[in-house]
Length: 295
Ligand code: 13P
Image (cartoon, rainbow, N blue to C red; front, side):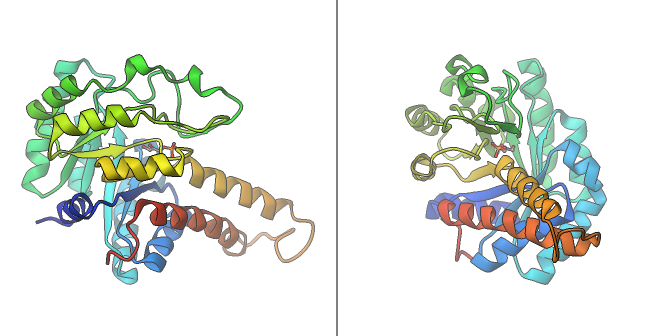
């Protein structure tokens, strides 16, 4: 059994979720791995195509594998929201453990065709595939600071996952995980990001053994996260809260009037405070997701 499969099975059987944290830089990697090591938790490190391109896809694989070894932490490396088969193919060859093909912008038949092709190839290598039919970003929300916006502007229940369509998609594509959409838009908003747990129950009932992911993990109330895990979510994606923690702490460090940080120009002295701020967010999520002390 591959490492990814092993940890998703454990998450399903032991009712916890694995945090999937986006890393676009060595600072984010340090924060995520530091938190996982402290709390003895498996972790998913993921990069969108934009983040992977910034880091360098081979460099990301190399840095992740070295940090996994040197820290003794199981890391599942995931390509997040790849728009098509071709992006996933590059990551599969580069050594990723998990691929999220978000074909929601494709026509449904094309989404099914590309996702099935990927699943057939990935499964031969023990790599897991996540699929998506409902565009979580359909109204334009990304992993960003939307606190000046009302959440209702970027989400509408008519776009939420239809359990019957989801079951048909899973059957035709043989994916391992479905990216369910139950109100979990990306980003932070002025309002809390409440999710439709009754719909999640219906999706779970239709999909049986298929793993479920919950994107948009920033800003969902803790009690709803716990309930979603109880219903059967195995992967929760978090990006914006890390980005905000990094930006706010970096700004505070650079704006500080005097030493030790004020006027500092050495990158290795500027960054540790921002890394610690992101690590605190990851640790809080790991505890909430119930994945601490699993290794
Ligand atoms: P947030 O930015 O809301 O944490 O969502 C992240 C995500 O779902 C990445 O795919």
